Length: 480
Ligand code: SAH
Ligand code: SF4
Ligand code: F3S
Image (cartoon, rainbow, N blue to C red):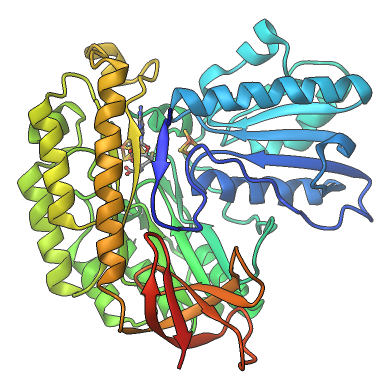
């Protein structure tokens, strides 16, 4: 059945979904590359860094892998299914290579890090294996692979943040963009492979972040999403204070300060962020969100489980009560704040009672949206070493199904509560179903679809929309 499920319309690219760029015009470049990305938003942002490095080295992006000189898969290891999908794609590319012997195939990202040279040696599926901290060495590796040598670089770094590289926006709508603010993760959630594939946590130079956001704004973008596995532990210090960004801190830059600096770029630049670990989000961040209208009132606060016992085994370092108190605090400081979550069903030793705790916590939090998965054991993680993956697959799937059905109801109820209200909506693009309708989002991150008729707005405009109706995942409105 399903490995991961997402309810409610949300145009964020999430774990396990492939994205194929329509890319920049490859004409005018010596060679063509094709890149397909899987996994979290950070991986998608990395593909834009890779595209920038490749552009500088004479490669233009193409949407057709058959005509590419270089085919890259930016991969995800978070669950077994994500890895299986990539393997299937690699077999397909391998066939394409038969018709184009000069074609090089490379694996980037988290699977490259997890499986290292295995791809080259045992499976002979690819020509290059490049880990997430080694993209600067791509040009040299491409050259090596071109001469038939094995090209591998999976070294993790303690300081690489690609701060100076200006990402090439692949398949962008020109309005919303992701901006990486940190890399790696120092948490050790027992189920999670990320600390192993992405290495130590490090924060990117705040000045370069603000500069990138300013540049996006000047190019017409109206929303930035600041990305990190754990944005609330962002922390940066420096001796420099470039005038052009207006950043004058002699003090360290915390996440709250960074948010404020980005919000101050322009009132018409919306700021979002993801992901917050419940243990790290501070009152200072919440007050900063409340203070600036353009910081969107929506928090992705993955709970993973509603049972204190399971949370302990997961090494999440908070309890059910602590999480509930955090939700109360958020809604006290930011009334009406949108909330979303990630949930894992069937973690090691999970009982029916633990599972019911998850369902009841979901009811308490009234999430607008959740990303829901059943537990997939990842080799090398703490959980794989310490606990038995002892919940039968049919039980995992049944519990996941119950979680999904509850979330559908919560999303529908959350949408129904908005009918009759008016919202400021940023127009992002045509709606998926009709070029006669716009699609945009509220500050709380809900998707709104409304007719263009009788107006001459464009993507990037803010409009006031009254909600007339809704489906489970989308609000339907009219411009007023
Ligand atoms: N840094 C983010 C999440 C990164 S991974 C955070 O801490 O919230 C995205 C989501 O994938 C996680 O929140 C979790 O719900 C899910 N996930 C991670 N490892 C998993 C595993 N082994 N099996 C199933 N789901 C998993
Ligand atoms: Fe994984 Fe936990 Fe880090 Fe998120 S915070 S990336 S779940 S280890
Ligand atoms: Fe996947 Fe790596 Fe992101 S494992 S979820 S692509 S950090």
